[in-house]
Length: 405
Image 1 (cartoon, rainbow, N blue to C red):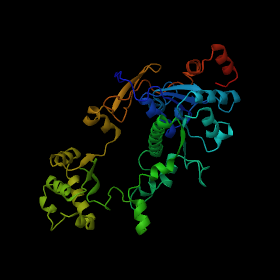
Image 2: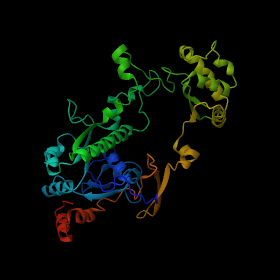
Image 3: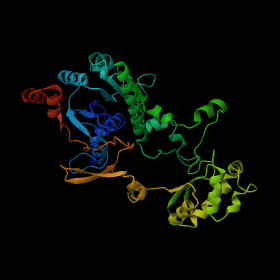
Image 4: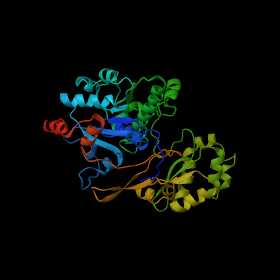
């Protein structure tokens, strides 16, 4: 863990993470990495479903939970119990941010909607994450990242031409994207509150986060009714060569020549500088018109060399090229280690050292920290109720007997 003792920018900010799985909790995780005190509110029975998502550990919780619930304090609370709802209100009164991802109307049904909570705490910032947002005809439909990828248009573009659309990489990509947008929203709202004293809620929809990253799809369809189709490993709408090529040893490289100058570098790397002359393929317009031929030339060249040899020649001519890394490649990558993108954290109750992705972005004066990995269910319930709400051991014992906590 980072031993840097400088004050973190969000120190003093208290976040209640009452959400589940990845999207809204990821926002809370990011805030916690930069100093916020994150109280993970979970149901006493089972807790967050993320505890069971992925590879289980000897403790029962998964590696996903340990990695993505870092720096949080787990508090069990049954929000459907009247006393549990009241305790939640008491915590909200002393919080700055609340992250939730219940279906629209669920918190309202329990008497814990924005209308109630904002009266209790006018400075509250509430991140609300759902599949389709709090409004619109689809608002009550269940939403997950895979659904968001489909509705937001990214899944349609992933796969081979005329083939079955596939999941674009991680099945939870839309969750992480929405967590990032949610974090931006929270930081903006904190800035606004600093100036005005007023809180607000943030309405984040999974599909909207995916849809926002759509290049020129919207204006191209709006102006020309152009529908982009699946391109497979090559994207020849704007540049060529611009895709993935297999090497002699069965591995893959990505090559991107977005300009004529970059193609000239690739031609030099291939030992065929004449290909970059204006009479052959030196102009992007010509390369796009003959994309299949150009890609075939590059494909043949790559297949005649190992991945290491292709990359060595491309790097020697400053041609944009990189390996398609699997996780084993990433663990062995010099850049990853130089940037400390992996960090080992001791988990005492497991007696294990777990390697997790390190914090991004990297701040020069106040870099984030990983203080702990995902907590045990209810590990901090007593601690938080005493510290934040001033409750006694007897009061906490009564709540536990009633199964409120």
